[in-house]
Length: 208
Ligand code: SF4
Ligand code: SF4
Image (cartoon, rainbow, N blue to C red; front, side, top):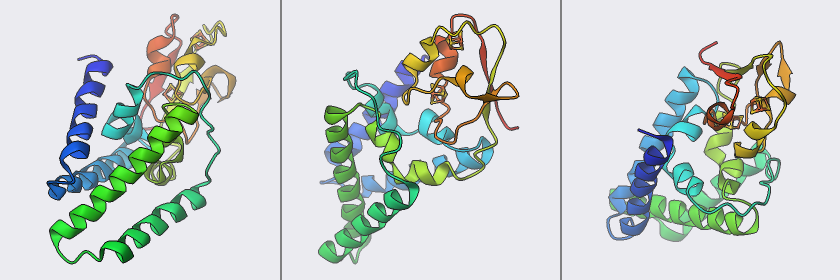
């Protein structure tokens, strides 16, 4: 199955939760499955593996048209991003006062709806990868064993820059290596650069 097909399936799941969650708020509990998968990915593979390989929201954004603008990778620090998330949950709690499982489902659904709207505005203003650059969960994952996965750059690289063009964050692995390895905690390990390289220069070194 190609990545595009996988992304379409994940995006469909996301759209179903978004479209029906207000009526069936239990669907919003899927959020925790996604978080659990992200945490397992971070522990097993390191860093943001879950973002680039499993996140349905990330898959949804990846299918949006490219605006051609750059995503601001340093827009929000980890502390600010986490503070915004905690403030949003606290604000929603004070507003909704959930006391049942269904009520909490509504709260989680509201979180999904608000953050998705923020991501869509970020897409229109910047780039479809905007949300992935500010996502609080991504910032948590990237602190978990960020050193574990790296991209090895062979010396066959001709510096054509094609890998950088397909990278959501515009990283150029051959430019930023140490001992032939590109390590960046913001890399979501999506492998787009690896698949795009015409010289098969890049390989993912998993579980170092
Ligand atoms: S696409 Fe391949 S050859 Fe081109 S710069 Fe990237 S790693 Fe080097
Ligand atoms: S460097 Fe490669 S694997 Fe990492 S985010 Fe960019 S395209 Fe994906």
